Image (tube, rainbow, N blue to C red):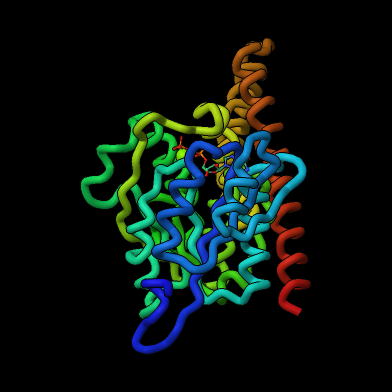
Amino acid sequence: MNICSFYKGIYLKITVGIPAFNEEKNIASILVKLKKIADNVIVCNDGSTDATGTIAEELGATVINHTKNQGYGAGIRSIFLKAKEVQTDVLITLDSDGQHDVNDIEKLIEPIENGKCDLVIGSRFLEENVKNVPNYRKIGINVITKVTNATLKNKLTDSQSGFRAYNKKIISEITPSELGMGVSTEILIKASNKEFIIGEVPITVSYEGNTSTHNPVSHGTSVLFSTLKFTSIEHPLKFYGIPAAIFLIIGITFVVWSIQIFSEGGRLVTNITLIGASMTILGVILSIAAILLYSLVSVVRENNSK
Ligand SMILES: Nc1nc2c(ncn2[C@@H]2O[C@H](COP(=O)(O)OP(=O)(O)OP(=O)(O)O)[C@@H](O)[C@H]2O)c(=O)[nH]1
Ligand SMILES: [Mg+2]
């Protein structure tokens, strides 16, 4: 029997979902530890070329095999769909590289059990645990979280943690589409838009013998771009409109200055004219992007609400 599944006498079905790509070294020990905690474990084996899938099957997990490697987000999407199918009350996602401590699961479930939150993030940046996180990771996650927070109703400290708990409503109403690591931001923005309550609890994380699947620069850049994509879709006027206005003001000022010099001295100052023209053109392009995206998003939202 699952130790987390009774709350005030009500049985809650708790499922742990683990995205995994070439994790044959770590998956067994996590699944063994989970046996004492969860009675329902889904592993998404995302085109691993090692024994990840076989080990997970042998240890009794429900294994979803992707024939080709599609990315972390694709793994989370498959786990969401399976969790919906098995009608779980709570879905916990955690990494298969051994960085997360399964004993923290209870802490993540609590705010969902007592109805305080719909989505709970295990944050690496609450309490003392922050010292375990390498500095380059802290900086990258901080930038991405700040951009994400611009769109969210509840402000967070760790938008990129893969250790999370979701309640049944979120699982049934949100289907992630982002294939890569950007899925973490996508889910938060979609959940916040649907007025779900997002909370955080402190977790411990280990960076010993770092097992990163991706190079931190390409990982960080791709997550930042996808975060910018999702936030720009949410607030196109703010995202494109404000820079457009700034470029237009600077551009027009330089153009007027250049015309003034021309009318007084009969000659164009190349630098001033070039700055004026390029800034104005950029401002016009961004204004068009803001208006087009705003109209497009409004039409899509209107259709979705019908
Ligand atoms: N389904 C799937 N899972 C993946 C893929 N790449 C990584 N993962 C899993 O996602 C989890 C996190 O991957 P990491 O590379 O450790 O990413 P991270 O924890 O954000 O980065 P670090 O802080 O450097 O460890 C692990 O469980 C990986 O096995 C992938 O392409 N597909
Ligand atoms: Mg990791």
